[in-house]
Image (cartoon, rainbow, N blue to C red; front, top):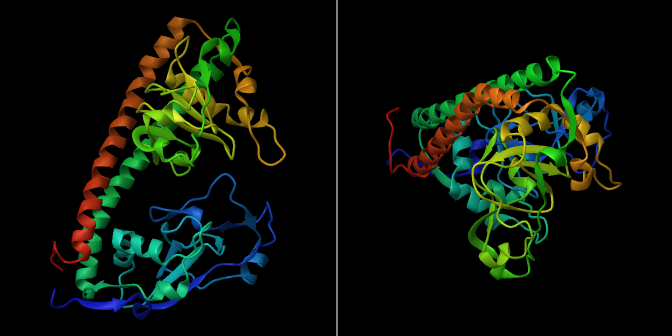
Length: 390
């Protein structure tokens, strides 16, 4: 640790700034995405379904000095999310802060400094505002941390990056596997559909349930050991299965939800703001009112319904209504039509697609293990408790 020194963030950066304080002129045909803090996640810029676009003229008007030395950080609303800028065509909103590190600083190392709990806790403590937290840029420049020589910065970042690369590889494998499952569904149930198949409603082939939010004013309902999910849990969901939820409730909280604790293996579909987030639960969970819970206890499997929803997502969205935000009610969803083949045909499809879903589940489990190991190792590396050779 003798070669390490204590420094402030402002000492090793060329600039710390934020994006546009206001609303740009949107252009549906623009080439540049208007991103905010909620578009940053796990080192990447995430383009969502509702991300707005701007044209080149509007981009140039509000352009920021982004480069391969830039780290993006969410500083307003949801704080602490990160992305490494990689020449994406994007324009920044006010909740996306850009941090440009000096030439003698390893950007990847600083990314891991920012993911460490010490920095994340600093953001929470520094933030102002009771309704919408905001991290002042002046306060951000004052963050103090242990700073090793450049060779050790690179070595630390190398160890952590290797773990993240393995995690990213499995995420990419899962995307490929999911695409394979979608292709199988399209071949079996669209391209090779039989005229003799019967047209049913969703209500004929599965059970549908909704959820509730227990009163947040009643503390005895919250922070228990029962999973309770909202569509927010799926906003940055990267694969098929849900293993955990951000919030949990107590037995008393569960009593407030008429649908109760839903079984493992159901399909969750977000029904509003936005419509279309999907997951198969790997846990028993209660849900809020933003979901349609699809319980496959009649004619079809969770595999079928997950893939049916993915293939028919535009049909589902177009069935929604609402002046403030689009929403599809359980009643409307229940009446959507589905072509249903024979039980034998469905069983044969499940046997073909099950290995694909099992591999996705295994990969997600391994991802969770690697992430836990990385998160344990990270703070030890950041204070020099665990050293790596430069």
